[in-house]
Each structure stands twice: as structure tokens, then as C-alpha cells.
Amino acid sequence: MTSNPNAGDGSADEPAGRSGDRPGPPQDPPETEADRRKRRAVFLRELTEARELRERVQPRRTKERRMREAMRMRTFRI
Image (cartoon, rainbow, N blue to C red):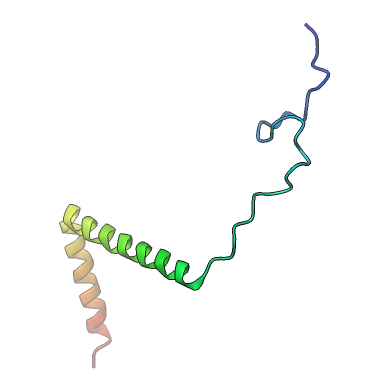
């Protein structure tokens, strides 16, 4: 059995012989405020959808959560 004369450090993340070509991931252009707002709106929409789905799938837990929240709110009333 012969050894490989071109053996690297054993890392499979980078192809052999291209260690100095790219120091890091490619830089994306700076995000605009409109893009950030759009992305946030999509995230909040999906979050609301996930909560609604959870309420439909786990009605008992949802009811318990609502009861605990109502009890918590009652403790702050005068």
C-alpha cells in the first residue's frame, strides 16, 4: 500500500488545492429596510399560522394555556 503524496489535512469541507481562493463566504449586498420589513411580515404571518395550527391540533393544551393566562391577568387587577 502506498501513501498519497498530495494528501491534505483530512478536511472534506474544502476541495484539495483551493484553500487560498476564497477566504470566506460570498458577501451579500446590504439588506434594505423594505426587504427586512417584507421578511419580517412573512415570518410573523407564518408564526401566527403555526400558533393557529397548534391550537387546532392540541385543543386541551390550548385551553389550559388560556386558563393560565386568564388567571395571571386576574392577579394584576385591582
